[in-house]
Length: 104
Image (cartoon, rainbow, N blue to C red):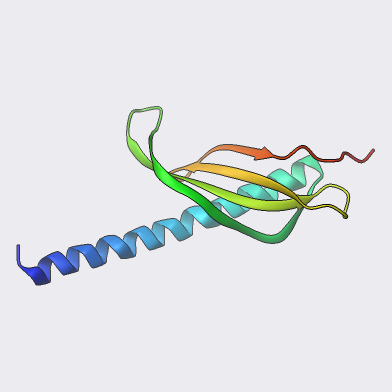
């Protein structure tokens, strides 16, 4: 394989990883918004940020990229709390939120 071909393959791989990461981030943002709305919380800043990235196997044994995204929310309009969304490929593995004050 020539250097030019190797460079082209690496460039294509980097572009794919970037594009895939943006798609998964957008999915995580939708998940965070929906979760907060469904449980009566307010998502702050309307954003998620990638906290960790690694590899893991899905239920079928396929190797996938696992990404953890953090977000902030409030339950009372005064305090900020942290939440985390775990994505395995495009699939949601879970949403976790800090203990927070509940309003009646």
